[in-house]
Amino acid sequence: MNKYSKIISMAVRLIAAIILLQTLFFKFSGAEESIYIFTKVGMEPWGRIGSGIGELIAAVLFLIPSTIWLGALMSLGIISGAIFFHLTVLGIEVQGDGGQLFIYALLVFVCSFIALVIHRKQIPYIGSKFQG
Image 1 (cartoon, rainbow, N blue to C red):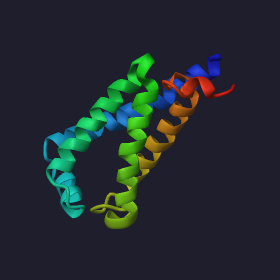
Image 2 (cartoon, rainbow, N blue to C red):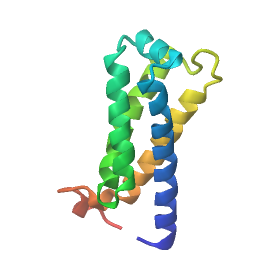
Image 3 (cartoon, helix red, strand yellow):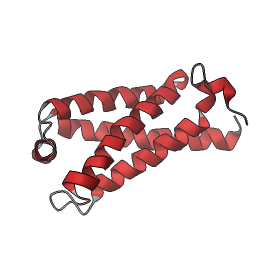
């Protein structure tokens, strides 16, 4: 991996991990907005707690060099669910946030995708098949 790929990898991993970790407080503390969101999608409280645990695991995996690919893959799965619910049930703007949560979700998705592409060769069984 060249110098620029390493810098980009570190940047996108940190951005995604920071966003994932900062939302944990709201999920685990039962913040009003989190309860509203998960009630609206019919997944309160188990969805709120479960997604929080998944996000915590993904963020930690993002920061361990040998598991970056797994953190990125987990993050893509979790955040795809969040984007899906924004587009189908919640709307772009949730409780007057100006679309901030949706923008964060998109940012995590893009950062996770970039990290997965950069570290695709680390994926067990199929990583060796990727060229370049």
